[in-house]
Image 1 (cartoon, rainbow, N blue to C red):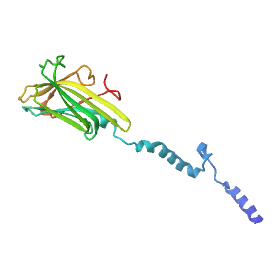
Image 2: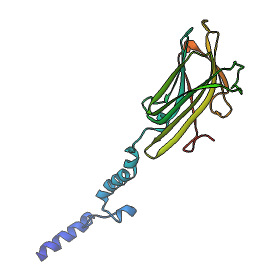
Image 3: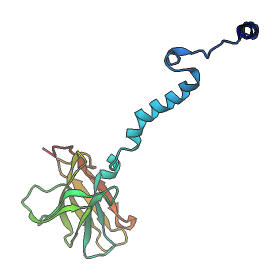
Length: 206
């Protein structure tokens, strides 16, 4: 046995082979080289798996919007409130219509006649209105999984060139709805008019 050891050691020195695996780098000081790659993969899984498996819809899907739809010459206009993902449920949805004013191109400052539609734990609420001038006040509250957001908006609408081929929806945001274009015109022939509501965060609008 002693002789065999003397034969192997010189041979290893001749081939310049170390008698044991070496280690490399800072990680190598803890784990042998063959396990460094495996350790890096495990660290990546620990860091990124909670992100990849995070539940709940994306902020974009939760964003609430008011959708306005009518056909040329129709006797009514449809107003819908839902998420960009129409399957997103909201804790509460409110869609209120104010009528009894003449269109002047802006949100009216006069007293209106209001009708209210409220839904709880629903994904959409819709209302038909026969008025050619109407103010729509909307609030959608999303509250799930520790995330709460209040989406709101108040916008005045009027039907222009009723029954003509160039029939259009005119709209003007009320002062506290800053993210909606202040005034605009939408050709009815283009189909639905989507308007994103303002995200006032967890506390809601002032």
